Length: 331
Image (cartoon, rainbow, N blue to C red; front, top):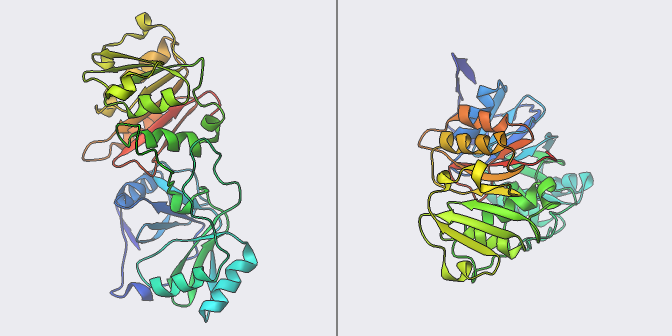
């Protein structure tokens, strides 16, 4: 790898299998189609990128939190093997639970190794239950005689991908899965989910995926959109809907709410102005908002959201070119 100015250039041999495995301190896993965003984030904060293979970005550092990473391998190690059986035994000697990250090559051999490891349940996650507590390691076959494995990772789900047992009847869109995921993977939010007695503001709510999810948790929801909600959502007894613009609601006149939610399609800078205004007037302490990014990722506005006290920005497995910003007093 060479570095010219502020750009990285990854030198790739013609045969990807022949590239040696560098000694990495951490491995970042990007979601499909968002490798560039993760690589740019790591580069901008000064990470020493050693190699990029598929969705894996190997770094020299120790695995600092990342916005765009779906999972981070915190303790990567090299394991040399001469057979499928030897590879399976080497992984099993470290711990029980392993998830295979399928790389670009050696897929058949890697699957043979995984098949010899103890079975890890792949059942869809039931919303409302905590994420798995048992450590789930991640591994891949770098070449036919080399395993790259990490017993400890930041996500309890394979490659950071949360697969839910979905409700395919009631919600009017699949957008509700964003809320289900954020309340599952962020422990501080899981332990304080909206419920009876909480008033939630949902901006840009139509057709009502988020409103449905919040009302189903037992919270009271005041939703605002220029379009109506789906009939079954608007009929929920704890839902009130107003036709209008979410940006037209003045926090000084609206009164205090327990939660502020927004999945609106808008410029990130406009969303930033709105939430900081609500924070300025002290009318809400807890926020979950989607930062809808444009053609080019604005890393500066993402940084500004992340620097709001008690905040976190993350890329959910069901996000596309967007990020989820949360603000909670326990963060």
